[in-house]
Image 1 (tube, rainbow, N blue to C red):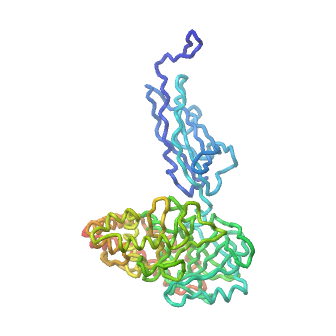
Image 2 (cartoon, rainbow, N blue to C red; image 1 turned 180 degrees about the vertical axis):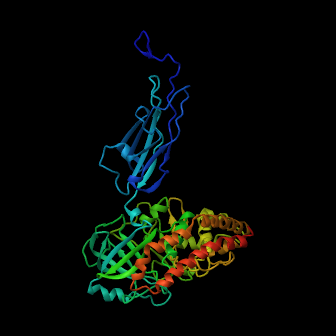
Image 3 (cartoon, one colour; image 1 turned 45 degrees about the vertical axis):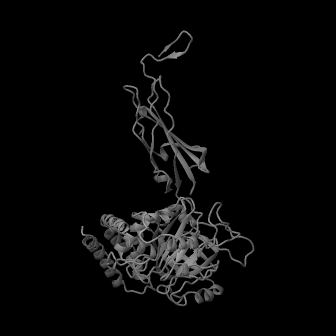
Length: 526
């Protein structure tokens, strides 16, 4: 470095180009449920046009976002080659928090980085583009596959009879149940005044003398209490769903099925197991299933402000199944209702049946024979639908949308994309039926199968899905769940199958998983 006669610095080596701005490679763009202690920030390789330039320093920043824009820097780190720092990979422990001591739960952040070659003649690179992510809300640990939590539900005498009166539906028809007051203890936290009700259809519903399933709402709006309830959460959740698994004596089918759906990119809830106690009495092992609410929707869709509907029991997307007005008595039912305590999200769908009426009309009147696919992609995330259909065929989900009964599904309208998606549920009766590829129900699947190009697209997706199924090693997952919950299943006082049925059922499931890929490939001619 020399100085001109005017006192300005001048480079003498002919190199004064700043390094190229890096790219943030990890975390993935838009990734959610990041546990701060697990967060790894990784950047792209160093690049500089100057001959012989070497990567000497990296600066990293994390900013808290508001409305997608950075508002305050909360964490900062510098890595220096002279001190042996890793210049392209850091964790939070390698830097310093400027606000707080960790990242907040369920909050939006952006990370960026820049490089220096350490020379006197070049500046730092430009900052990388901001890579956005969202932190975990505590639910990751709650749904950990190796966890087995205890949940204590208290149903007071005044609530027992009315809850029990609604425990069993009057046949295989849609049935709305009301919440009644109770209390719950979840992972050491006690909540009074929660809403408690049973759940389940005509096959799985049980009353309180048996192994009833439950829904718990921490922020239930009790009409007898003035004002709106406070929003209460534990592990990021304010709603809990506990399935009794009385129709699945293996206790593993739902966890395996949801895992496979998720590997195929199909929006489905997370799940593991809990032991449920009612009024201090052990009721047994339950599936701890993520409730499908707006927070669930935000995990899977660009916007969670759309409308969600549920279809049950031979209930296809047909005009006669949609209410002509806003009455909740048809087999397609809205899951969000207008409430002064929970206003409709800004820019979201009206919480009525208008969206689904328009959809059903389009499906049944808007596509001429032979003109369904790929035109349907304008209003439906049909690529994901093909994946869902493939999963249901492989696992034999006859109680779902695409194979036989047309049941156990929700549909969601994402207002940001103006497209619909199906969310499958009720996957307990699976891993037993070898479903033929032409065994089809549901208007979406039927219309697709009737057109050769769409049928070919499904067969191609089925071939891809069976490869995923085979590589997922669900056999080991089934065995691990069996070993983990086996002692709890043995002592379950309300289970409807024997312990031997549990052990043998898991083995039958493993055998099914072993054999199914060859059967699918034989049908596909692969």
